[in-house]
Image (cartoon, rainbow over all chains, first blue to last red; front, side, top):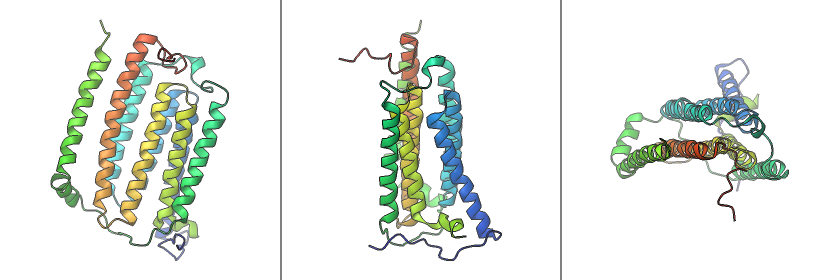
Length: 183
Length: 108
């Protein structure tokens, strides 16, 4: 097993177009990291949702780097536009009391143990992903949206229909759950 | 500047996905409110989609397949968020709190 080899062996200079692309990628990664930190450790939940939106914006940028502008657009629409706003609405409807917002859950060990577990999982997965020789067959072409649409309506049409049924059922279920007990 | 070309490397995206997953695990364990745990679970789903996208970009024979799977993950995540938030609203209406330490009626 050879270690993972980066595809681009030549290092671009800082002021070339490739260097600018690299800088934009680093900024995107920083957005993801900062957003994740804010989302998991902000004191107020509204700030956590803002961090989540920032993190998802960064993830959309990374999808753009993975040659899928369509998925980047869907990420912005669904996650940043819908899910984050939905969670913000829920926070407005069910605001926790000031003393309940931060603090360890259950015992005093929950925070440090959670941090330890998350860090261990991160180190393990990162080393596993980086050290494994995955082979090199880079698809360096932008994916055709037309091809994706054909696949969705031919090979994956069953899953496509099922996902729409799941969405319909979840909408009805959410309505029923939120309506019960209301006078 | 070797660091400026790391976006052509599969390992970079896998490390970012692992980092999102670690943050999600930490938030899920340490957060005190249900909505905080929901935010952390969204991070975990984003980590999974990131891995699918990275592998379909670098290794899959047809890169559209991983993207279609990511699209399905997004749909499932949206449905999950809607259901979870309606549960949060119902819980808040009955208990007047979303703190997990107060919701212990089913505890043995």
